[in-house]
Length: 286
Image (cartoon, rainbow, N blue to C red; front, side):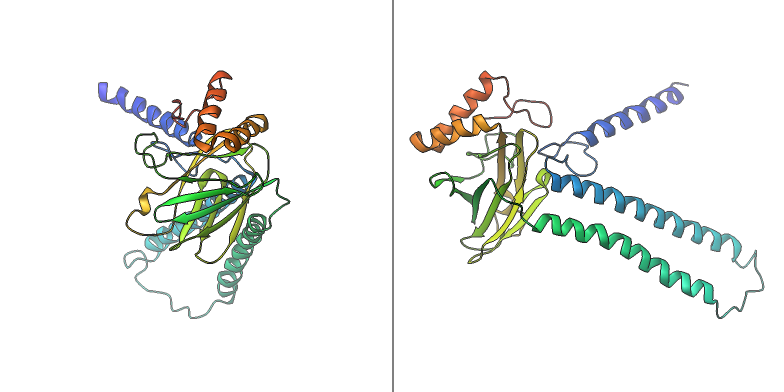
């Protein structure tokens, strides 16, 4: 009797945990997370929509194929059908299995091309950040702000582990950020999942992408090219703040350096009660 009572409770608990995990994941992955990280930009919202559309299509196809297999196993086994059919041609079926896949591919291709165009067609940028990949850290430059530059490397003392860096990339909310990406040595890839941003850093070449963060907070990513033995230790950490907070960071970085600017920004966020929380609801390290 206890087992009968406990089973629905366990199922309900798992469903609740899954629902909560599916709603979490803004800026970083979380335990038991289902699906993609939450969207913080229009591009990622489009990716979410396209992902949901594809999930419906593949689910319908999988169920249809399963139904056909079950039908064939039941209807045409040796016991149920001792005298097999000798049908050699069916024009209708041949037309259907040719036309329907074409229609499905067209239905997938249209939003797919729209998404690719949306990602690659850069709108007018409000500011530019240059990211330079190295083995195994990132250099950043702000060409629109008197050439502010710094190096961001992994910080093993911070949480979340393997995602936090010693210095943060700081950008304003609701602004179009153009990201120019290159590398000094081997292939790297600048990737932030909640932004829907992923662009290769190629030595001797400039690639570019963009994002417009519509939510404040801390967003994490990683190099997603196999760039060498310390590939797993090359994270990306972007803090999105208000325009006033970004201006204060820039002013401090110009006069006292980026590290002092980071401490100054942390004190501002703490004073205003806006110290960013990570996806688990715990204060993020500053």
